[in-house]
Image (cartoon, rainbow, N blue to C red; front, top):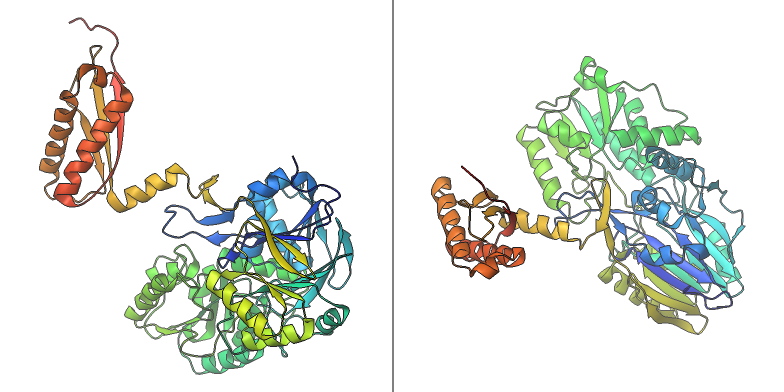
Length: 559
């Protein structure tokens, strides 16, 4: 049975990702029996999911409603807004809408997974309204740390919802429109029922700053440097890549790009009219032929990703470049929370080689793409929403944003969590239901729940080790041979004696079992597990995972 009836005239908002966390944005709006999806993003995995790279929102709810899903609107091309699309689209199969640059990024992702001909991808123009389901949608250009960042105005006969997407204010943008813009004030004058808005930088009372100032500072800094200069940043920041190209030109250095995503963004940008003044690039395999004082390298890995270019350069295992004492690495990016230890190790690795490391904490070489409270204040002054729904943030960000909206005189506010079904009315915003919401893990080529038993087993093995027991029983339920053990990840001192003792303990425990119990695989497995864990807890303070492989001989052997 469908969740919405065709005559259901409630105006609903439902986040399935991005509320209570930074990343993995996926939001749904409903009216008159139809749903609209806004963004379909991913986030990077943590230690909770060892061996997993990507985490996706669980789309089980909208999969059951896919017949009523009118389309997916993409605000911009960052991974936390488009990264789940190639993995999840086949689950809900609907048309996708994006502006030109974002569409190019989406196309490359769809090409990789063989969906380029399956997905109906519509390229829209900012400011031009178009119908989608029961809504009229219009893309509102906003400044952000990627080309073509947009908010989306969704209008129906109940009113207008303004979904801000990711944004900031910049009166000297290097790419994109000046923000504030006339569209925002016009939106507020028309009347906004609810604003669903970015909360990432709500604890920062100041404005984020301008890309133009970053460009000036990088040029001056690199002018004073000798040796090679490497600048690592988010590849998706088109303005920053153009800045790096400008830095190379102004300082008399040849520019090389390293990292797959750098080249992907370059191709998408050139296809849609960006990077027009980019000089000829040096191929990375030719970097070693350029004098050290005459090369500037833009590369991936600003968050310490182990397979990214800067990490490989720091380890000394990059095929084409090796840094030496006196060279320079500039991290023109923010440290994303959770990456502090990884990046700290990378900084120290470079510093130990006497390479000059500069981060955003050392110099003004990065600005955020998200609004501080000074910018939020302006947005609320322009848009004047009746209701505020903070998204794109951890719970503490959402709570503070709701408090700030109250300070700005917004009458109605609510702090959502993924799975909350919220009705939006002029009289207020109300939690009316809860639906299933969770996380999926891209584990190799398989997508599983983050609560899948395979990941739980992997976590246990990574923390406490693992023991595999192989036990062979004859037709009478007696051990036909001594059990064989394979031990992984356990501290065991004298390995041979530890294994012998543990083998004897398992054998003794199985021998003491009643014959009827030994005929039950389940009971054999449980006795093995208890015996091994009891000994390991007592002797080495570990509680390992245990798997018991049972072989039963049902035939009589003749000698």
